[in-house]
Image (cartoon, rainbow over all chains, first blue to last red; front, top):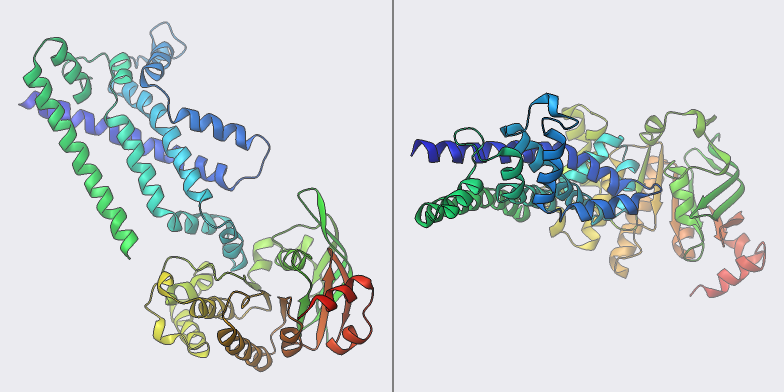
Length: 214
Length: 240
């Protein structure tokens, strides 16, 4: 029971940290892409949109190569640690948050920027109020980012190693139990993962709908 | 009366096209200048340039004796206020929308409350103060938009066809109210419209822009009697 609790806690911690880092990267980067008018903008957006569909195993492979003992970042000794899983999950979630942030802000009336500036807003004030105006789709970006990492297994397995008591998370534990033929255990863990994902999304949806009704 | 705005040899380029050229134009302090012209003539471009939201490719705009190029952009934009054709209200209450520009300027709460109350009353929207922007009619929303601009007590007010999308009775009522406020407060304002009657009601002097070029400045009578060129004449003939 303690082991399941620890696996669940680690899953939540790793995915929450990866989502927060993705938000820290994706919100400003997506805003820059949405509001910017520069050469190569469409190309960067197409790369980000492709990144939204990055296969987790490919991310896992690249991050594993980077963090491998003999790899460029091998001396950091991060492979098979929770930090490695966070790095891989951030690579998966950051394009999702960036792409959806850009889409959310691009959906606003473009004259809103000029209106805010015309009322005397500084650039940071303008961006803050654009975020406020797009808060519902931005919350959806957060939910999509979290959803993409809490449920992925390939990258976590490859860079975390599924080490008991250290890097085992719910998805990798489900894979392990299935490979052992312990379908009952695997189903119980799957149910736990689904309930957790549902509860977190329920809370975020409640916040989103509360905002929509106001 | 001293000039608040002087425009010299202005050229604005958008998407690699010259969209506006103004050899010379001045606006006196306390004056309402109405800008008329057909759709796509460059009227909104002029307002955006005056708000320093578009930078000139050539020439300059001098505000109160100082070129905008030498002024701090934010400091300048906090002396003016802009009302667009669409109300562009934020998803918040009427009261919060009206107070938005004051919030940007960190106006003390007590002062802000007083000014917001005064202008909501002046524009007849005080009963709507707690209502959210999405629940307003077109006319109500445009009143909020005007209050949001007037509450800043700007030195220069820029109005871009603010009543164009409204039904005729609401349009007429709002125009009357705006005309009264502008006269009463001696505001310096630039009002864009393509309606000559509206222009005559609001101001003495009218500027005609056609095809991205300032063609003529004068009274309605002068413009109708002696149109500066064929383009102005053609514009006048197209009017209802």
